[in-house]
Amino acid sequence: IGRLFEKTMMATYGPENIKEHFAAFDTICDATQVRQDAIMEMSARSKESEEPLDFILVVGGWDSSNTAHLLEIPVEEGLTGYHVNTAKCIRPDNSVEWRDVEGNILVTPDFLPLDRPARIGVTSGASTPDSVVQECVEAIMLVKKLL
Image: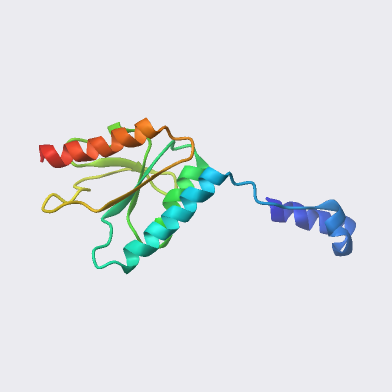
């Protein structure tokens, strides 16, 4: 959108006058930036590791573009990621209901390895309450215990 405005201002006022009619700056909040930086580092470490993560769990509202972007980062790196909005998405039968980067709601069976400890990265959107993240982690631990 910013580039569209910039092009419009250049067409209207000329490229030589763009600085007087258009300015763009990053408006991402610090909490969101910290999470994006952390998931980029987590993804890079997983790719380099002899024991990579089984998946990255992204917890937060399905309508949050910042949270959805947190899923895009590991997916672009070729890693598996699941974006859940509540602990109810993590089911006792070892399936997970999740939102993909295109916005589709999917269900994946047998998402947790049951023959060994799971290696999971966890992050959440900046406005996601810690209690929701904790509930999701507890739901995963319960699946491992039940099965």
